[in-house]
Image (cartoon, rainbow, N blue to C red; front, side, top):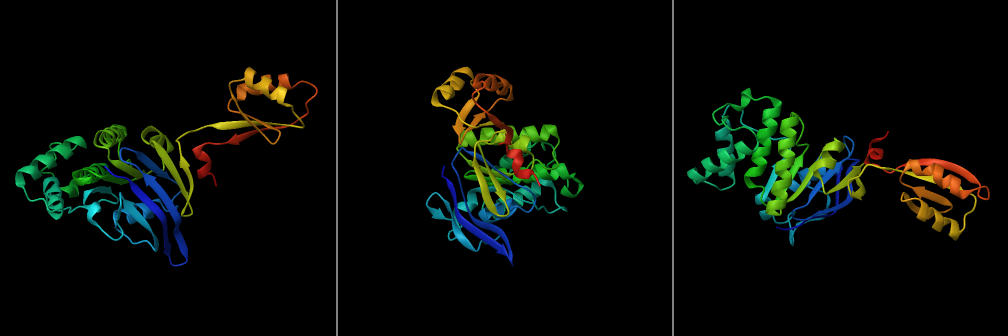
Amino acid sequence: MGKLSVRNVSKNYGEKKALSNLSIEVKGGEIVGLIGKNGAGKTTLLNIIAGNIYCDSGAIYYDDINILENNEPRKDFGILIEPAFLDYLNTERNLQLLQNAMGIWDKKYIRSRTKEVLEIVGLAGKEKKYVKSFSFGMKQRLGFAQALLNGNKLLILDEPFVGLDIKGREMVKEYVKQYARTNNVAVIFSDHNLDEVRSLCDRVAVIADGEKKYDGEVYSRKKYEITVSNINEALIRDIERLSDSFIEMVDNKIVLNNKDSINEVIALLGENTVIKDVNIIDDSLERFFEA
């Protein structure tokens, strides 16, 4: 399967900048999570990719096709963004109509596919149940089922864990992982829960004020800096040999990744090196959510 490439996309609502020259790529088989505070621009980006709203500038490619100009690839995108249902119809009928809208009319296939996706999301046996009687969590599961009906190129999931119990969240995570790897499908989703993001994503992109602030590995860590007056190369080599937690030496700052190594490094420095400061540097994803 192909690659999703968002290139320099911008979107304004009046004077408010929702997105500003944002770029991101998601390869087939890769799961990328969008995180950020409320109003950061995550859902706006997903809606633009899905074709629900227009952007002011930029381009979005699926492989070599600009989907802002050619909507064809979107027919194979699975989308879970504020799922909508016909509450006065039952589960089976809702999924049937959605498949009809996709151009699928084979009744045998529709029944088979409907049963398959309902089993995946834990709604087996609810085919004849009217959606108006569903709880919020059940509607969220049904929305995930909708996304799976035709998500064989790209899955776009906006906060897919909202309203789900622990069993439901684990079900979604495990299936998305398996589905992405087995079918080489690209997955992009947003969430506020960093633990959920860490347990599912290959990569994470942080959005703040409509701009991408970080794009890389999923981690949670702190660094520790010892600022000294002077230090020579021989002493740096001694620190490297002594401590596995040594990361680098930058501008008279000894950078470590383990606080338990601070005392042994200070002892090694001896009396000839003046220690000016010891700081903890937050290098975790949580820092992006601080006020």
